[in-house]
Length: 243
Image 1 (cartoon, rainbow, N blue to C red):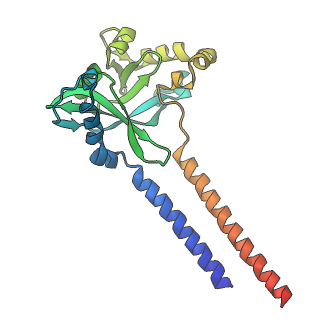
Image 2: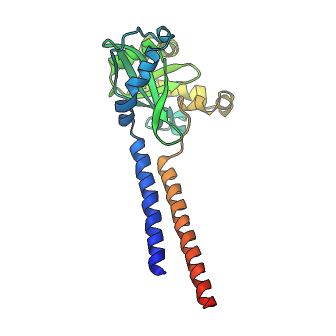
Image 3: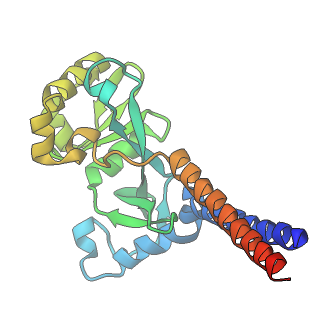
């Protein structure tokens, strides 16, 4: 019976850990980019409304490197820390047609924990700006109410599209000035509630911490093992009593 209990626990752990490993493999944005991104763009290019996304019918498509978007943490809004930006699960990449930046596509995790196509059509001006800036220029932030995109580095903030320029003007802002703007716009809880949580977090909202999700999963694994052991031990005790 002890061997049976050990075997059951071993098998349960094997299946659970295999499931975790499969999920981790599916979480790679690089894998999505290599396997699906171009095809997802081609679906738009081949559609009847491709011109609405600034595409021609050419299928010479290339997708640039995906970069994550970032949201405002509470300490950033309160002007306590310029490092309090929180990475979201939304990734963005420039789409090139015939070698020119045409639009921007997005990918995010689906309910299975795998990255999938989220959308396209964020504007040619954003595509050109991201192409010029490069993927190492800073942290990409989207402000939903204003439909404004910003690039934040250690010392300054650059507006990436026309909506951002309507907020900042033509020049860059210092990081401290930008934090004052964010504080003035989002420090009032009533303003945040009026527009929804996404308003104050740069677009993606507050996401559950992945480590917490995994810890919760491991907790359920442990409970499952204890349950099985309990059932087997109870069965063993009943057999002893009846014998």
